[in-house]
Structure formats: C-alpha cells, structure tokens
Image (cartoon, rainbow, N blue to C red; front, side, top):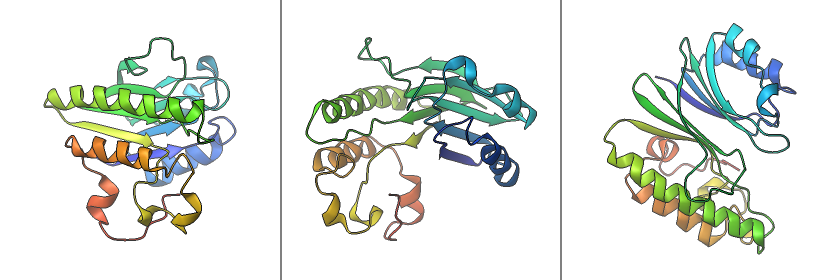
Length: 201
C-alpha cells in the first residue's frame, strides 16, 4: 500500500489542489492535517467523488485531521488521544484500513518557547508516547502518520544554529521524538535515506 501525509493548510481553500494530487499520486491511504474546517464543513462529497472514503475530526481555525482511503471506507476507531479529557484540539484521528491501524496526527507547534504552548506540546507528546506503546502491544500493523512538528536531526533543517530555541528543534522535543522511535517504531524517511540531508522543514 502507498501511504501519504499532507498538511493541507485549509482543506476547502486548497480542495482543487488536493483533488488533483489524489488523482495524480493515487495514494491508497492519506492522513491530512490542518483542515481549518469545522466537522460539518469537511468536503466529504468531493472526496468521495474522487474515489476516497474518509473519516475526520474537524475544527475551526488551525486544527483538524482526516484519514482518506482509496476505494474503501476507513473504520473509525478513535478521535483524540487519551490522557487529557479537557483537551478539545482536533489533532488525532484513528481508523482501520485493510486490517492496518492508521493513526493520523498533528502535533502542536509549541511556539513560542518557553511558554504554555510549548508545555502543551510536551504533554501531548507524552500522551502520544503512552498510547503508541499500547498500539505496539496489539501486534497488528500500525502506521503513525502526520505532521509531527519536530525537526528530529540536523539533517532536517537548513542552518540548525538558527533554530536552537524554536519549539520544533528544542532538545526536549527532539528527545521526545527519539523516545517514540525507540519504542520500536520505524521512521520511513530515515529508513530509506538514513544519512541524506532532506529539509523536512
């Protein structure tokens, strides 16, 4: 299967681009982030007309996540991460597609550092760690795909010295990402290109 992740930065404003990309790239499963659309404004009919089933957790302004599956309906299993019931940010959606658990996520940006947004980012990462460990115990295929809002290594960013106090490159965030990988996950990008300088940011 071909998996893709796409920060669409406004699903309705960029719908034409999204539909053209779906037609040209033809991924089997897509995780979308930053829908910038409340639940009822998600363009489900247009996406279905393009041949994709969808589940989503919409939200006005900056958040919102979705999972699209080509030629099938994803089976929704979760909206939101456990661990902080009062958290209303639409940043996690999960579904099963062909026996594979797909987790679509959109980590908080965390800027400015220091501050409450950065603290929230670290708490969200900790909740992801805890839940990801539970997913691994299921012993079924799992994909964690999305926008992690982290630059894991200096290979991911041009002039890393300029980013040292950015929430995406802070040592605490890079360590949180490393701990996630160390649970037993595989970074697809670094599996394919272990030493290549690829600017993910």
